Structures are given as structure tokens and as C-alpha cells.
Image (tube, rainbow, N blue to C red; front, side):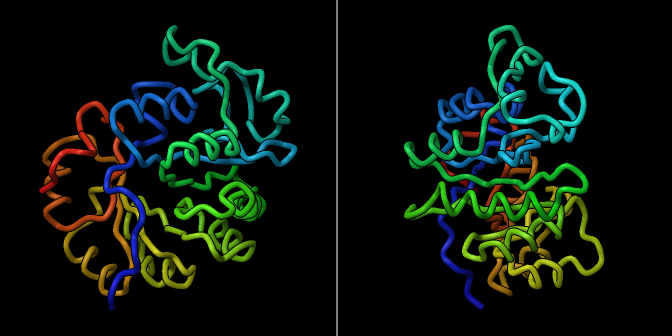
Length: 250
């Protein structure tokens, strides 16, 4: 079976600029873009009043000045937090970003986006559905839609049921039993694994079914070269200062 057309770049900057800037902030995406990246990954969840915003953790302490569960606060409260000072003084005062704000930035610059649906535990269905409907609003009429990925089959199923037009990818830390059937049942166009779990057999199985193979988070040259030689379709990396997306590959 032939794979469907794939509009996304090979190199994808993790959470904007990896670890060089406060993750999931617009400052990080601008820094990633300054290193030549045209494809980005982010984490999206819901505020208490249903606004999709960017944050990896369920709680606020690690990457903001806030405390407690992020989904318990309204966007009005979340928007007043400092999401940059934890990283370095240079980014102090950087706010949390909304999905709408990142969409505007990516669309205006022609950047591709992989949105990881990162629900607070218990919010899987609501988060998947809301992000799919927001994508429909924010990317209406755009040639390259975002790729929606998640470790949560429930969130992906909810996204599909809310609006099946948007491409989906199953995220896997390891190849659990039934992973392939799970991805195909969800109507996924791709599977994204921990890079250590990806090998020639997995890529062949995915490509044979018309799916794409992506990996996270590749930060060293030997791992990158191994995957490039195998014909990987996407590499998510923190080291945007080490890997040039414009360099010849292979």
C-alpha cells in the first residue's frame, strides 16, 4: 500500500525549541524558528473554562509561577502566570500560550505543527473533542493542517468523533501488545514512538499499511543517523542548535 502525501517536515522542534527556551511558550517557537525549524511540536490541554493552552504537566509548578492542577484555573488566572522565569532570567515574565496564539504564529509564518493532546487525567474526552473543534476553527482553509497526536487513545477517539478531518497519530513510549491494531482502529495516519522502540521492522509494517513513522526525542547524532538510514518520516528533537533541518540528510 502506498503512503498518503505527507506535508510535514522531517525535523520537528520539541515544545518549540527543546530546552533552549521555556518550553511551550511563544518565545520557544520563535527561537526554534531562528534555528531554521519549520515544524514544531507542542502540548495542549484545557483550562477550567475550556480554553486550550500549552502546558506539558498536569500541574503548574515545574514550568510556571503557579501551583496546583492547571485545569482547575480559568484562562484569566493562568494568563497572569510567569512561564519563563523558571528557565532563566532572560525569559522572566513570558506568559503561557494559548493554542489560538500559536496557531496564528504558525499560520502567518507557514509553519507546520504537531499538537500533542495532553489532557489532565480525567479530561481525555473533553480535551480531545475541544482541540479538534478548535483546530477546525483556527486552521479553516489552511493547506497544511496540524497533526493531532496523543498517548491517550480516548483523547484521539474523541478528536476523531468531534471532527474526523484532522490527521491523527498514536504516541507510544513502548510497543505494547496490540499497538498496530489500536492505531489503525483510531484511523491514525502515523505512529510516533520513543526513538529506542523504532526499528526497520516497525517502519516496514507502518509503511506497508500506508502509515508514517515518527520518533521522539532524538538528541544525539548516532541515533539520528540510524533512523535516517531506516527511512524515518519525522524526528522530534530538543537539540535544535545541533541538528540543522536544512542540512542534507542520510
